[in-house]
Image (cartoon, rainbow, N blue to C red; front, top):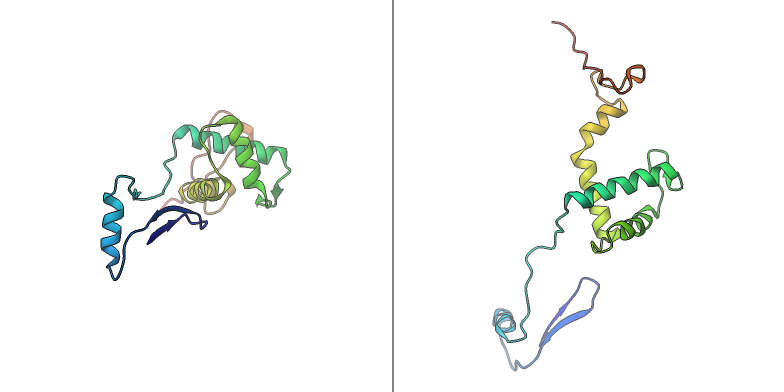
Amino acid sequence: MLGVCTPDMYFFYILIGWEGFVIDGQVLRDAISKRYRLKVHHGTKRKWVPEEDAALVACMVDLHNVGTFNADTRFKVGYLNKLERMLEKGLPHAMLKAKPNLESRIMTLKRDWEIVYNMLSGKDNSGFGWDDHKKGQSIQTPQFPLL
């Protein structure tokens, strides 16, 4: 017998009919070749489209501005579930789940945009920043020491 489970331990495929000693590869080849065959998916990584990224960032900004889930420099526990509900309204067919979809994507965005965050927050920014007096006109240029 061959039984295949989801990560949360639900059977989604069972193949019976093999008697005696067989090699696992034989059973797997048989399962893949049957009429109602086992379909092997290569990779489970979700592809995000730009509209989903934009919606996620917009919802995070809204969540931050409301302030309910703010805690120092990060969000409080439970913010992922709130984001999931917010995105369900804006993108009902995307089926984005708090874990693993949103949690994973937020970590990716943090990693990819870390340099921008560091520049704007004042960490290692070499003088780069926003001038409140020239709001809307331009961003301060980096200050480099003359050699």
